[in-house]
Image (cartoon, rainbow, N blue to C red; front, side, top):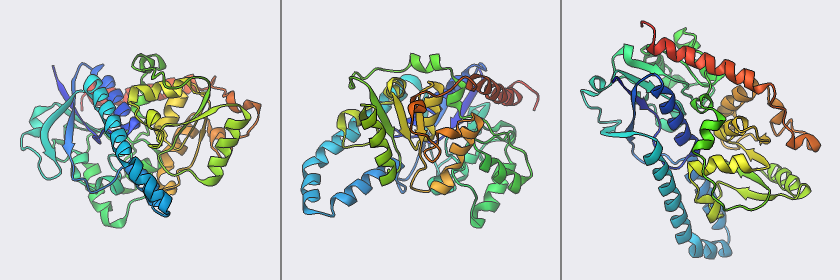
Length: 372
């Protein structure tokens, strides 16, 4: 059986990362490949958005003596919460994702790596984000022969590149056999640097059906009754928090904050529970790209908020997603707080989703089924 390797961001803290990795693996398996995700060891020089958020909470707590006492009391519980959460992510990965440890790192790429697989796929996720990955060539598959290099809907995570790295990106992107991207701004970057037209494809999570996702969903049984679910990777502004509180109060909903470490029973949640939390909520309020994707796939009411940190650079993928599915009306700045808030018209979405899935599979067919 032919083998294919996925090169993506590895980690056990972000729901979207784990779920897109699983989805891409499952899609590639339909082409008859033995699919593995290669682990990439990284220096811990950059903080994840989750860790940055925890740091912000701690910084605010230390502004008062009460906050210091609170932290000293809770710090061990927080550490336990994070460890238990990571354990849930690792259990999900062990059950659903085939990972391969080849002792690969930015500084150590085995000479025979290209010989081990028939193809390499870079993506999805923000594998080309210079602010996160520090511009290593590894995510551009420079170790592999050109005909083996494929990009499936990777994200730059920024709207434009700094001049200091543009030349490197130009060389690396030109050496791909097949190029695609996840957001419109990414397609513009590729066009400007290489002159190539890269198709904008949906995240791999959207290639799996609602029924497929619910097969791996797990009911945590932590919540009773109706609830408003929040999932924010950035800070929540005062105005957004007020809007959320007002909606919950008016509609007699509990507020469940999925990414808040202070809510330990909720925070200690794995990717399978994440799916069910969204599936069972009355409405989702989020600044998360993958949060929005699952709200759409599961046909749930949602409000999309602009992330406070790096809002201008990271919002392109959200704009692309909501524009594509004609759901701009669900942006927080456009939302109308009335009786229609909980009644989203999804009747137009299935044909769009079918079209986008066809576009994605046509691209993958050109990678694996046609002569290159």
